[in-house]
Amino acid sequence: MKKSTRWATAAAVPVAVIAASIVVPAVSATADVDLPDKTPQQVLALAASSSGASYSGTVEQTSDLGLPDVSAQATGGGSSSDAAGALELLTGSHTAKVYADGATKQRIQVIDQLAERDVIRVGSSVWAYDSKTKEATHATLPDQGSTPTPSALPDGTAVPQTPAELADLVLSSVEPTTTVTADSDVRVAGRDAYQLVLTPKDSSTLVASATLTVDAETGVPLKVVVAAKGQSDPALSAGFTSVDFGAPAASVFAFTPPADATVTDVTVPTGASGRSHGDAAHAEKAVIGSGWSTIVGVTPAAGSTDGTSSIDADAQGLLDQLTTKVDGGRVLETSLVSVLLTDDGRVFAGAVDASTLQAAVAGQ
Image (tube, rainbow, N blue to C red):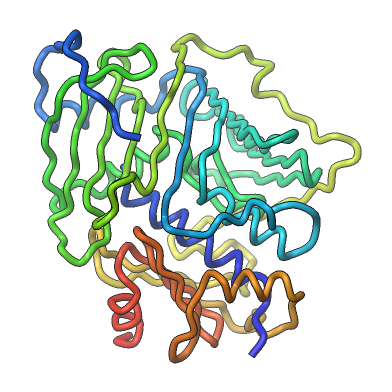
């Protein structure tokens, strides 16, 4: 059965979202750093208090999930390159310029070869622009004050990429599923910092630990690293190599799409179920389990496409390369996350191995 290209992209999206939501390069202790003692709870509170901080800096982000390098396929046009482009964010290393001025003004510039991807938020307005494809996406946030992360895939799906974004997701999963311990004080990007190690109590998760490094003065997360079980290199990491805590210039957050850009407006879900007002065909979401081994599923609503349309050979080849055929669909297994793509159009992902994921879904 032929699958639509969206399955290749769907194989990337849950990996990014789920892997980042359970996050943790390694930070070396420095003998010169001796900060006043704080309990893990005090350090977590310090980090949580930094959401309104202003800063700018350069972030290095790396991913090692055992996925193949798809950078050669992420060029050119067409649906297959869209899928490869999404996956390219989850492989190798990336450099980004990060700017924040309080809780509602952020900009991230992901620097690619001869191109860049930008996401800019000012209040309720969010723009995403890819200079390579000349595609711009605009969203207006709902009034209830939801705060999406300021980075996104070209299709608008959020991909936590900065230390602050990853740390926000880590903090939401701390207790009672996690043992939190204080580690040696360190220096990151010239800043003295506290360091915490978060270890899941859940033996079924693929996550071995998460390390959170917090600026001692401002509380801003400077580095987050996720380790996967059985893997020596970090599975995911994002850390500042330079940082300045002055407020960026207002011009940094100004954006007008170029005249030759293709502009798309997207609807931001307003309800807890993920359904937008007036959008009867919006996919339904499901959650199986809890804690670090939580499985998230997305089921197309009635009237939506089932993903059986024809696709080009490149996109089909990418899907076949990344996934394995199983009863009822295909499965992608990385060192940190597994994704199940069912024949009836559903997508399930979690930080568990493929067999655990399949069993959980079969039990629904």
